[in-house]
Amino acid sequence: MEKLQRRSQSKDDVPVELIHRIQSLLSVEEAARTCVLSKTWSHAWSTIPHLRFYKPSQFLDEEKQRDHIKFMDRTMSKYVRDNIPIERLDLKLHVRFVNVAYKWLRTLAAARLKELSIVIFYDSDTTRRKRKRNLLPGEIFTGKYLHTLCIIDSRVRSKLVTINCVSLRVLELIFVKISEEVLHTLFSTCTLLENIKLSYCSGLKTIKVRNLRYLQQLKLETTIPIDVLKIDDVPNLCLFDYDVVYEPIKTFNTASLTSVTELSLHGVTIDVAFLDMIKSKLPFLEILKLKIIDWTMERLDITSCSLKRLSLMYFEERQICIKVYAPKLRALCYSGNTIPSLLFPSSSSTTPPEYIKVELYLSNPIDLFFFLRMTDLLNLSSKFDIEIRYHIREPLNMDVNDGEIRWFPIPSTNVQQLSFYTRNQTLIDALLSICRPKYITIFCDSTVMGFSRKFFLLMISRIMANKTCDQKKMEVKNPYNEKWQVVKNSSIPYVDDGNLKLELKPNW
Image (cartoon, rainbow, N blue to C red):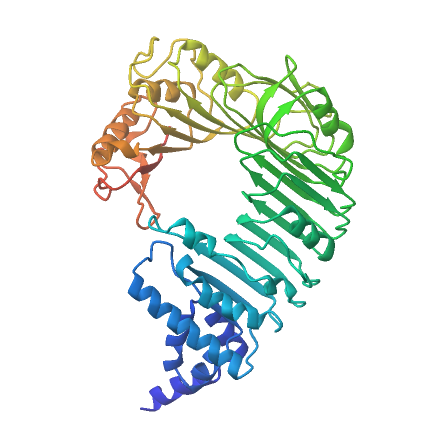
């Protein structure tokens, strides 16, 4: 009895601030259940300043949804009636119930709400008429204490009478229909903005980001190129991410990007002017990520005195030649359909990066020249990661004898991780003949579900058959406890047909 009493006292000794912090990590329903722990927890639950009305998108049972909405309605009514402050409100609900939620947003707009997140989802039966009902109340843009606003899958009125969220620091609009007039009014009013993210927002052909002197991150994602993109007077902008899915990026001004340290462009055509921008107009650039559509030169000459990480993606069959002048470069990642030709000028100030990662998505049959280029590539860096996706099952048209390719007598030992999505056994033999990776990850194609155990056993047998691999010390990671265990007689009893990944640690 004394032990139970001491336990009860210890729960009451927990500070209310800490209880609020714990409850804020839970949904409102889950937080409500903590009130049974003690009187202190019960009181804390009734005044928690962070409310999360969250249901996963697959939760579409109408009766339970209505119970959830009634619970939300009662909770919000109590907070408003008792004048209990709400600092953060997270809403995720079906479009058919938005009117109930929006009713309370109008009431809370004038309160001291600091963070607001709204996620609306639909099911396949949702009609166009119901989708049009999802019109955000303009009052949410009048909260002068609002610090963070995240809206997903909603519509904003084409004209707003008042925008007064002058304290706004973070603005995220994802799948939101908004007019250019409203967006630019937001930008001109919310001059303290630090982080802007616009993802797949319809109705935007012109975006002007001006006079935001505190802006640090700007992320734009769209399926349709923006006709006019102007960025002016953003002296503290550190990250600029521009992603166009289907079309190449159109020209945009770079005069205000001089402070950028991380630049990510997905869908860019590289020409002399672009390379000159990287070289001379971005003096603080440290991270560069490019998804290349095309280039107008025979070779890509990337020059940057400040660059530390370079990531390139090019998914065409054309061979790409890249020459990099970057004395501070530490890591390079490349993704594409062919092995690139990488050149690093040999001088005291420019050397190959310490780490290189290559991801290859191969759709054509592999020949000997593929492994010749791969071997040349492996000689450039001290640490390598390789990931290969190859779905052609026909044997390679080359001589692989007992796991050794005659032209590669000394395998590379600098490969840290070798990952492959393939069922081509001769490809695996050939890869293990040119390199000795510290770790091997095998992915089983989801289309062969039900055969993954048999497939993995076959792959282990192929690797252990390699003469240079110590069969007694081959280890495999148990996917259930993440521990390494020695493979015995090529058996992996804990791997079933539901596993699509196998991680190995060979001992060469």
